[in-house]
Structures are given as C-alpha cells and as structure tokens.
Image (cartoon, rainbow, N blue to C red):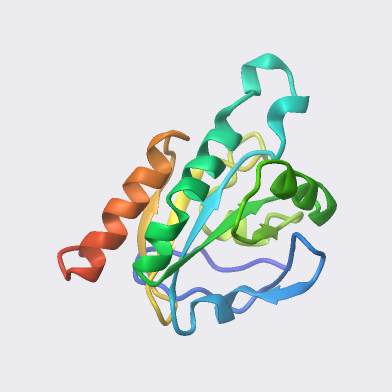
Length: 166
C-alpha cells in the first residue's frame, strides 16, 4: 500500500499500522480529538548497533519521555514512529521506560508519505505535528535528536496560543 505525500495543511490519512503490542491502529483516529506528535527514528535500541549509530534514537525518545507531561498538558499525544517490528519496539519501550505508544511501520508506508524515508531506504529522524482533527501543522525533517522534543514543545505551545502558522 502506498499513500499520497502528506504536506503541511494535509490531513493524516486512514492507514492501519501496529503498535508496540502488535495491535492494529488506524493512525487517523489518533488525531480525532487531540493533537499528536509523531517523531520518526531510524532504529529502536541503537545500543546494539556499531558505536557511530549509538545514542541518537534513545536521546530523542528520552527527550520526548521527559517532556511528556508538558505535551499532555498542551492536549497533544506523543507517538514514536519506526520501521522496527512491534516486538523490538516493546522491548525498547520497557527498557527506557517510555510512557507513550510506539507505532510500527515496517513497510514504511506512513514514513514515506511523511517524507521521512532516506535515499538509502532508512527512516530519517524528524517530527510531525498534527492539530486536533488531523491537519499537519508542523514538520521538522531532519532534526537533531536533542532538539526534536524541544522544538516540538515550543511549536505546540505557540500553536495553542494561536501564534503558530503553517
């Protein structure tokens, strides 16, 4: 299955993916009444990769973990998006105590539509913010692991104050 490219102002389409528990999730339902941040990472549990890859995904995920109450307070949910299978996602979620769901896109259907598939076929690091109702209002691609949660929270606060625009 392929999706049309999702650009700023477009709505999140209905696509069924798996969460970290292996359950089907229609991602369009995740933004029906609340906003959502989907942050994309190349690989969960990068501690098992060669040293040059270590740290980025965990840094980004833990940044969103540490700011999770702030996102919730702004009426936005957080989701980690990767091409890893649910079993790997669940192990990593438990290992680093992530309070939010992980979305498995093994075929990179949504990842590609968001523009987060690298030329090498990997998942690029970024984040995508959808307003309540599902419209894409912010896209940061690429973004550094450390900056991603900070920039996302800044945008969400401005959005809720009516100061953010497409």
